[in-house]
Image (cartoon, rainbow, N blue to C red; front, side, top):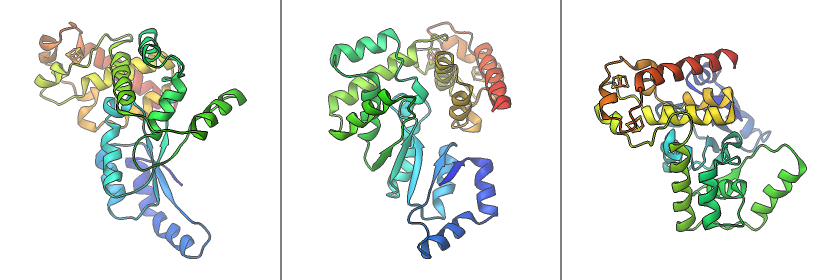
Length: 264
Ligand code: SF4
Ligand code: SF4
């Protein structure tokens, strides 16, 4: 496993000819498969898969981030090349286990006997070409629950996928920053900043209090989508139905991200 490929580490892997070395070990029969885990932008991922033949790619795939941080773009890139996917963060560091009241109500209204963990794990495993779903566990009870999900695994049907999508929208619309992800602000932003995604990441951070997750997810945004590119023109404010002070909030998120980065 080439762990944690991003812009910086990919250069390092390339410099030491890591993939060439792994190929040699494979030819000698010392290893059977090699792959990478990825924490970067779709642009970097395209570079990573361009020149090498990987046996698998480990991506952050869950129903909340599918749109929020465009996880589906990364998934589509490796899917197009037929690279099998191992999923990390299927429950987003616990964020999809400890659901808000409204998101939980949506789940229970449709599937009263399903737990949030089961729902999130099944969603991840239902995507095509997923070979493994990794989930952090803290105790034996969680391990037994997770094993039970996969012992009699059935992929999600269309209705379940739709409910997951509705839950993602509910989660996105809640939290400290009352952004409904309507994207009207983005229609006028001259810098192309991904305002709703940034606010969704911040809201999740406030729920989980995980600086680690804020850092790794924020770094999946392209450089030009990030909050530090805001020029404070104020055009977005005029389009926001929630009257959010967007430039100030972006500055706040950027500050938190810098802190998270320093503590990582
Ligand atoms: S204030 Fe910032 S986020 Fe809003 S439109 Fe201008 S550049 Fe974009
Ligand atoms: S216009 Fe306001 S509510 Fe809509 S996505 Fe932008 S920040 Fe969120």
